[in-house]
Length: 612
Image (tube, rainbow, N blue to C red; front, side, top):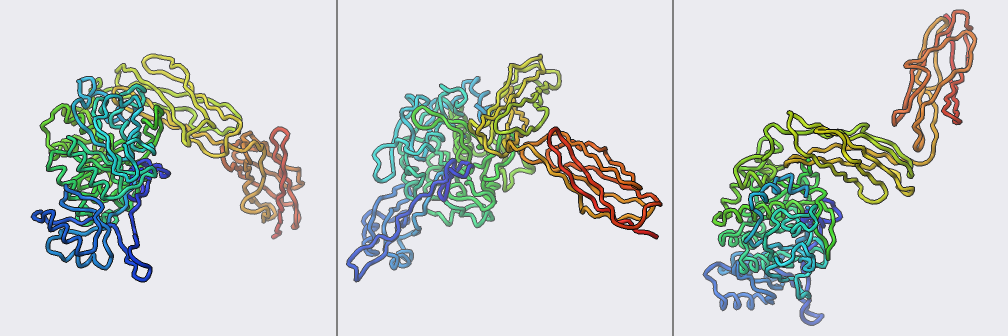
């Protein structure tokens, strides 16, 4: 996820991918005595190509700048500069640009199957020999999923001496790209890839543009073929109207272009800002920008959209992605941060198959073989479509039996339970077009947690089959709505069904009323009608029988009938009242009673009879 320069992942508690972490920019160092304080701000100063070290130093000294680090990849430096000198520095003929060092923040076996990466492993395409650089919060080096494959580790974060992950986001991202699969459910897209890890974000998921530039240079120097950045600034593409933000981030754009010129494919999160637009580096023209879709290829609501996606974007699974976490643990997260390493891992698969591919050839291949989920592609939402690893590598589609497909359904589709109750439903899997192919089922619950549990029984039947979905609340389950997703997987195909659990109060009651009013006008010998409504309270879900008190001179009928059955909301019957010609004008009271077990409630209808 991510925040301003975020990791891109969707659940908003974690941004710039999973986490929206805000990268802090150093502002306002104060130099000099109290009587003559000078405010300085951290800037990235880029010099023209012909300007050497001596000229750079002289220029910075004349501007009163204090250089904190050199950025050789762009012939520039990071410096604390007095605000009053900035405009003069920009006018210097040796200077290409002066940009504030903007903050950046961090922005997840289901994703593999959805993009068909799992089918590439069978043809010995798994990322072997490719160095993938992850620029993030570092990596948990003790996690066995990365054993022996972390080639180099580094940090750009002041006050740290190693790339050890003190947040979790970087480890999660790395696992999506290339976890070995000790836990098979968390196997990465390219499980044999070699990792270059540079810690460019701190423990809060925050960093700066200059740290990202330094990380890009470190990755190039250490032989990276792919750079993956699940991070982003705040939206920087004019609300999604601009195809790129190169001019707004010229120093970062130069660094990325230099990386591409050195044969490195650069992949970056589009951002988690939805319709507000894309942030950098995702909005830079030289990167492959990555948005997020769910398991049904539906665009995630948080995924940033804009003209940049149409220009250089693609989407990948980024909702509820299970991957590595700190130490030897695992976690599920959402965000464009999670979708980004899916694409980065796919690039590693491509390069392990054909190491001669240039970054431009990689981009063309991914875009040409993507599955267009919102036609026509490319567009501002999904770019060129959802990535297809198998098709990108082999030029073919899904390697499953011709015409094979299957459906997943559940009956009923919802239930209402008390905070301590058990229920069940039937899950049906139907194989289509006469093919026989194993289908595996799994469940997930949102919001997740132990308060509502779901399990599936052993399937029965062949080749189509049924399974019983058992749902249980544990006695402390809060009231609310819980969504259970049943997912079927087979041969690269993913199909889902949804089951809704409404957890209601233990209160068992209902109310009885008439609608729209309890006063009815009726002529002698005439007819009038009104509605009788039953409204459930708490977890009440029983039939209610309605009766009327006898009233001389009047007859009544119900439609549909005198028994109102609870349907999950307000239920009603139409009461029609007939007044005999002998009924005298005046006021009459009709009593309506609803009964359900030991519960009974009454209401009255006032009848005003009008004579001729």
